[in-house]
Length: 132
Image (cartoon, rainbow, N blue to C red; front, side):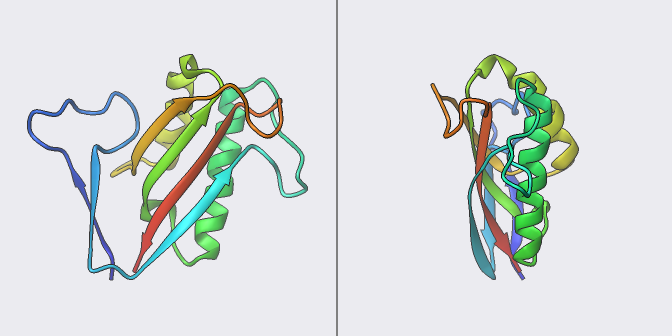
């Protein structure tokens, strides 16, 4: 059974958003690498144009569906990389993430990019999960 432990080193500031400084995985079962997910619904349509909260919610739902198809849950995510078109939307993004990762959130990197594959997209997230 894969074990996931949050590591909060002394001397390192606690996260200002929804992430952990590091995740230690022991007794690995299997690793799942999730591609970058955007705010597309199951038909491929971009949802919530211009609404970062709505798009973040759709991305999290896409991550959830995919990790569940692999036999896990969002709690099994150990790392995410978040690409956003406007880093000033940090608080709105993390308000949604807090709903999906209420405790022991994955380690995270967020970077601002000039564009994604569709100009209506505001956010993309990829992830790594450790499943039992």
